[in-house]
Length: 249
Length: 310
Image (cartoon, rainbow over all chains, first blue to last red; front, top):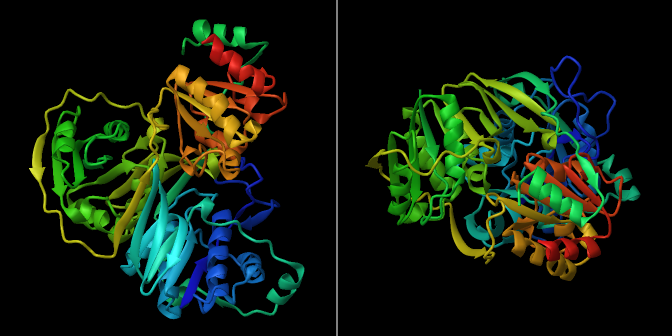
């Protein structure tokens, strides 16, 4: 069974995002970009299935500008067998990405797609579910455990108040939560080897997919600022403030 | 304009999240319907009928809808969608799970996690862990929207008298089924709706100290317990305690952060709280920049003293 893992190139999680001066978007120029952390977890899950003999091939895919090749090389260094880039300069929204991935699924025929539950840039948490719907497949989001069986998978999901286990029919789309695994780091020899692994480039046009954005971004802005408060000296003063100033206890 | 609000419930109780979503629906304007989908949930529908501003409650019941699985929920909502200009639900684990399926099947964009209604087609939502807010306009005929409940004040539980209509539940897609459910048993208030939240971070040092120090404090305040990702990753508490960008978003009247340094990702989940207290031994911890009241000190002494003084 082939496993497809979509990966997104995002602003590194250690960097605080700021609006551009003209409010037209978020400032990205010259800043460090990395693989979306949830996608690293998805990669790790796929690689472990391959190492365990449950997956035959791991294919990393990414949609976006040419620079996404870097992210795909990282995926290859982590253990993907090959990579596919759908290259475009057009801003991609989740529905467009889901349609591109659907076209790639038709081409590659994977038995499982594992993706991150959300990208830490747009925080949309949509693409995996949209892909699953467009394919008419089952889905299991926010997975903290995946057990593959014959034609089905048992997935434990993180829900409000606890955990839910689903039996889903394969093929399926599974999205990863933080606790699924601890992703490995790419070793230097593997980074070198990754340079020789196949990386194919396609375009939305060649896949026949309409990627026109549906949402117009009107502006980005800093959220309403929270005023920093005061430091109190001791518990007594804290209690006094909470009772008499803030009146919350 | 007619808006469908999909209710959040556990087949027995209508959850407060629904009343927050209704406030967002009211801000959009127009006629509001509520969908209650589940099994043996007529009582939930009755509660929904009393919600203010709702003209009609639509009730769909079947075994296939009992666990609100994404495939079956989406199929139902998509079937009802042509009657509506807006589909709204909470940006909860459940809403996040099925709403994108609805949007994809309708071939419309989803607008996730809105914190403001700017116009019936224009919404503001946090991106980049809430570091930035984006205002977006949708040109789609149907707007599929999930609502950050903490950003909209809940409407009252009563005041309305909506009609009740039963709708066909639809057939089971058979794509997935629930085989297990393990809810954390707790007598505490729910994290997302509690008036007071006591939250712990890596500074607690161990699961034992987390519970020994924070549980008595939470008991005194009738508070929910939360945690930073660091505390969850260190195994001090279960996953669903996590407050932050990828965990729960909370906005209680009082948030007490104990031994939490205040990473952006954590602040994203709690900085809308009305009053924030930070207790940390590091005077330079970023949490103090958002705290109304900061106390620099050893949490091992400060927390028991605070608990004792309450």
